[in-house]
Amino acid sequence: MASSMAAPTNTIHFYNHDNIRLNAYSFSSRIINLQQEPQPHKKTTEQPASRREIILRSSELAVLGAIFHFSGPKPNYLGVQKNPPSLALCPATNNCVSTSENASDLNHYAPPWNYNPEEGRGSKKPVNREVAMQELLEVIKSTKPDNYTPKIVEKKDDYVRVEYESPILGFVDDVEFWFPPGKKSLVQYRSASRLGNFDFDVNRKRIKALRLNLEKKGWASEDGV
Image (cartoon, helix red, strand yellow):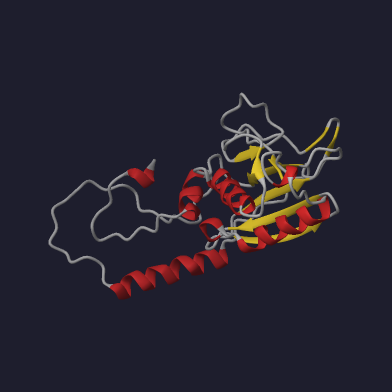
């Protein structure tokens, strides 16, 4: 990948998930290129870029993000599927995790959460679904892994959909949470990027960050993530 290749000393690169994902995503026409073509190493006596240059280039990148907003269209298959009732499976791309996948699919599967685990508060002081939903919403609002901004765009008694927007170029990931019917205190979820083929574990890291904060409230993973 281009991001792993050496660059001249007079070039400043901003390695974050935005430009990595942008370079990973294939555009029919290159309207924007955040990274110069790889150049061979040359001895140079030029001084490193000044702090002012870095600030200016950061501003340029922010302007590009404002002009080119790579949110992508909302997938039409989001929501609880009917047959069987579950969240959608992941596409073949490596930028999605879902509890609906087979456990043998190590690239896409993630285990559901239990808000009343038997070895925790489930045997002492279990909470109902309404309380668990409020705990989930609190964690969603307060957890911003990789500085992605969460926006709750849909909420029902048993379902929540959140759009996570990247800080510079506006890439959007769709994250869903579903409380399936039944006696078990389980929560299914799905986190997927709208654009690109790789997410460099952004979705899995997000799910882990949410889980760790939910564990502080008494939740647990059905299996270790």
